[in-house]
Length: 194
Picture (cartoon, rainbow, N blue to C red):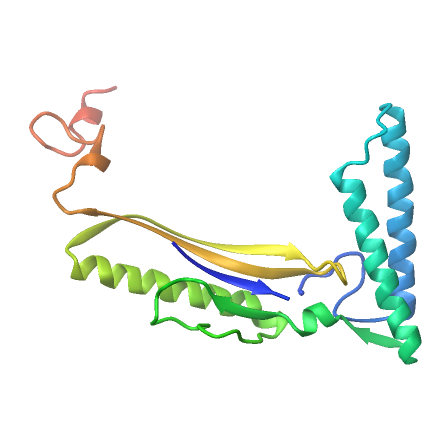
């Protein structure tokens, strides 16, 4: 299994992004506070005194946005860049030496998904070539692109990717269960069912 991880944001959640104005951030804070109040009322109706993860996430995002707004005001800036998004880097965590991102690299948020997808397909191609060299068949391959929410600005970003490859020896019949009849013919069992 190979993976690339983003650490240290591009969809737009609640109307802000990497570079938002003070008024944009203030409006988002108001909407989040309203959402938090609504959620508190819902929880009160359920007689629950235990704040749950959703409540804590909203509260954490409000605090992060307030910190970002305070920093912008202290620096006298109308527009502020999200430091977390600005400093995000991507690095391959696999032991495959022939793929990109072996050292931490900055990728523009607009191109992060295609860069990560391209990187994961490098793993796909290398795993296919390795299976051919070793005389194996590929039983299953998948690529998954992961997304997360930036804790500072609230934007969705590509947080990494993962490639899974399952191979078998060409004479290994463990994955053929239910596909072969007693004579070894593929589909024989299914031909008799109707």
